[in-house]
Image (cartoon, rainbow, N blue to C red; front, side, top):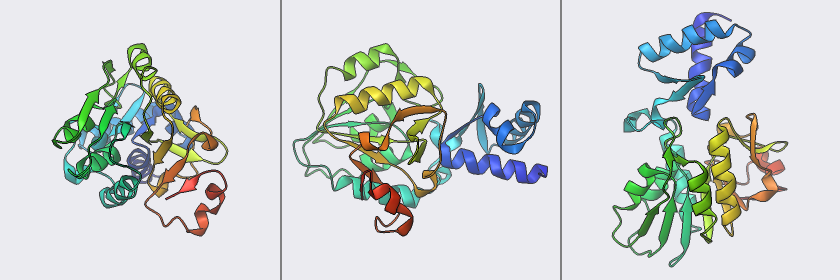
Length: 247
């Protein structure tokens, strides 16, 4: 594979999954980790990604992101619009982090009076713009990669609430492995969020479907709804419809 092809592949994977690991890219591209590191350094120097320990993250997944850098922004707005249909007045709602969740936070109408808990400072700030929402930010250690709060303190607090519904983004979704991620501490927080909620909704752009990471959050049948930017009647989603409700 030519260098330009490698760089384009790396950018594509980072845009879709928000984060990539050098070791995984080495296997996928059939090159050494040293080559991957050089590629990541070049993409970082050109301002296209943000290099982190062990890999890289998307600029749109970092607190310094610009609105124009958000990957598939229109698709994420459509997912947020669909997710809003599940929110009812008076609900206690738990939300994760990520750019899709930020889009959801921005469109909560002032006619709704709900209580929100979140592990994302960025989502909390967006929700706080709505005067009729009661917003609680779960306390803990801030992950510089995922921009959410992680650790035992977060997990303990999540065990003390019983939200009506939980909205989570995801790194990857597949029939075989369910919901997966590449960050162990993030996985533990997501597991605790799912465990605490009466219902769980996964928000994902279509490009993340049929992909898998090395760390499992939960099987598909552990969630209630899967919301994508695709038509729920799309033929490619039929296999998912047997496991989870599609919106």
